[in-house]
Length: 344
Image (tube, rainbow, N blue to C red; front, top):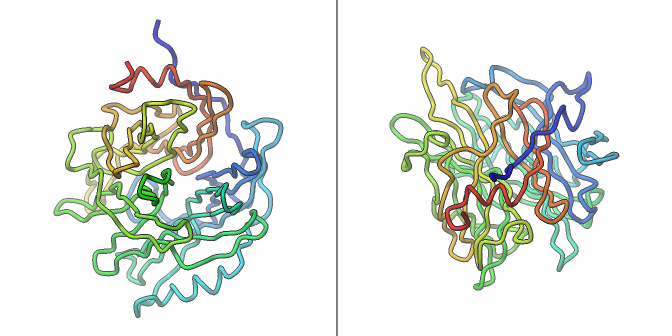
């Protein structure tokens, strides 16, 4: 008998308000047993999320879990010491005059050894023509959300090619003593610019990191659901699914190939799939030929950001739908194993 891989929960995990119509990209802090965290709130939106060129301006707000992981409360704006100092410096970075549109896409990682909380986030800067964007992977660190202090970005975008970094997946330390983390980057080709998955070599969680190899480029694979854009999501803990030494199953977000509507680029559907990551060598061994989750209400986007193991063989995955609201899904390890090539 086939087992369910997941169940979609009803409703939204956090209600929007008059202040914020759209919220997305939730990240929870493991040091608080995932009871506290942050979320991205859209302060203004220009354009349509289905068409390239739209601009979201954002702020990060603190959240706390209520009676269950299905009920999350929004609290105050996240205060990060030195935020203005760092962002103002980057606004004129490399001699450019740029427009910073706010912190995006948070990821939280608690270092058990050092007892420090690391917050990573996207730092997008538009050039004044709005034809290009420099996207840095920002960083702040502290003992808790109350004491975060912003540092220099762990990865700076490349000003000539505009290849940047966002959507971090923190990998375990390998046998050589460093991490082959994963980030979403980009690669401009003759037809379109593709979102790619790239290694970020991290000897220190505080940075600076180095760009490594591109380990998944949608154009180089014949997988239709992830034919245009790829972005790494949460790596699932070994206690949830164990596929052997030095490898983890992960969530990957993929978008169908771009299309054109007149002079505009129209994005395809974004869905949630699976991949197998060799974190010892920084290699992606496998990407699922079909998506795992496509929200029943999604018009164009289902994008996963956080996984919490709740009990043996079960966990909660959070994803945002159409860059508008956050949904929870229960994942079942036994059902997911049916999709994996080495565990069928």
